[in-house]
Image (cartoon, rainbow, N blue to C red; front, side, top):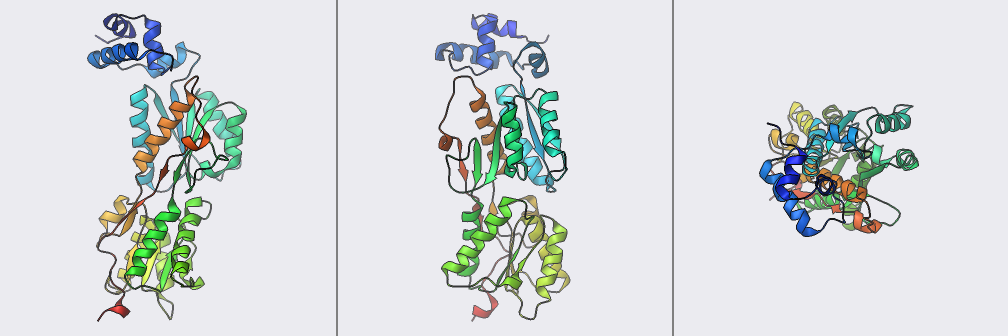
Length: 345
């Protein structure tokens, strides 16, 4: 027999309205009452029906996640973190893939929010970096949280989770420099993603700190795809003066670069070191495994959803800079990097 909110109220010795207030995370509920209701929900394994709650209430119990990202691993990790938070708070998650370059993308987002009666939405790049999307959501009074590339919380940004791509890229480049590499190439991701620019900036800053000028021929435009890595590495390996290391803007690009090097009979890492970014399965499925930066996408998404739920609670007001957790991807050294051939004894 299906457990209902009436059963929870009876076991906890409170009214149905009180159970509803607890489930809605209303801040006015006393701790003792919260503990009783939470214990009853846990004991009965009560699972609220979000669709029914949406229909019965003026408040929505669904949030949205829209994305335009070719990396399936990134999308899956984001969904995992968002779903974990939704289950914890009794919400449903609406997943909506779309084309960020579509002429009518702003109206599409507004229609999605209004037709699905979303309580809020989590924006990932490139949507989180499009001011017109934020302005449109503000205009219709919908809560949203943005996951964006950045290193320093700022009062000018509201409801953001920051990923410090700059610092992580600096550390990756410094790792290559410490191995004796000075001829280091950079394979770019999509230019419309701020992460691409931040990672390139971190790369250049590390070189500059060592008094090294970035070689323009070694910076190759591209996109976040395996094919782009193959093409970019092919271009680099055709140069008269070849790089001894390649920093790829993500693991998928790095895997493509490694594949291209193999086709050219270049040994990794004996002749060429390759690094990626994000620590996706691509970094562990290549041989040798890729040195990379671990970006905890599920945790980042979980934090974004928690921030969204916290912001949406009545009576809760946080300072802007308190709403900006910062994640710095961690350097993971694996077998795809080695001492520069020119510096070996």
